[in-house]
Length: 225
Image 1: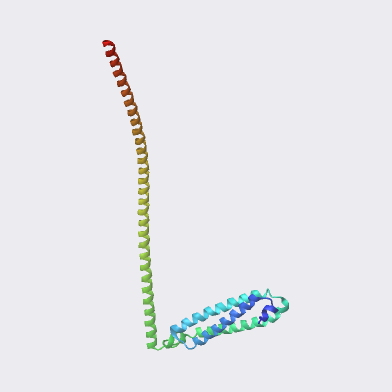
Image 2: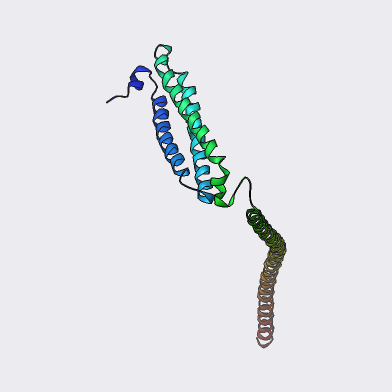
């Protein structure tokens, strides 16, 4: 079945916002009912949850107001009463939430009183001192965490410096190896040249000896002939 808003107003997005807002309103109403049954810390948590739901409802209502401008004026008149009803309901929820959150006796439990007795004052003072102690311990933990973070940062900087030094050492070693390889290549070329010259000299020496032997043989042969 088609949504009447889709056909009359031509805005499916508005219809989606409206459906979401109804769900948020139902959830907000349930949370407000739950607050009345709670006290102390659970009540504070419930109030914070209701405040978030109220913020979400206001955001959706704002989106509906914006999207309403895209609806043809011929059908916009049918939308305005629905928007006003949502505004009224959200304002009522806001007032109810404010009333519930202003109830200090419920928020702080039976320990709170507008006209406390000496025992109540002492208990409240002890609670304040306890809260101060917890705050001091939290601050101390934060300082310890900050100190550890600073020490870790110092260690990190030292490690980076060591890595940088090692990198420079490796680069220097690599450059030395490359230079050594160059020396080796030149030495190999020199040795090959010397080997070629030695081979050439050996061939020349053998040739000279051969010629001398032939000459001696010729001389001897000529004398006995």
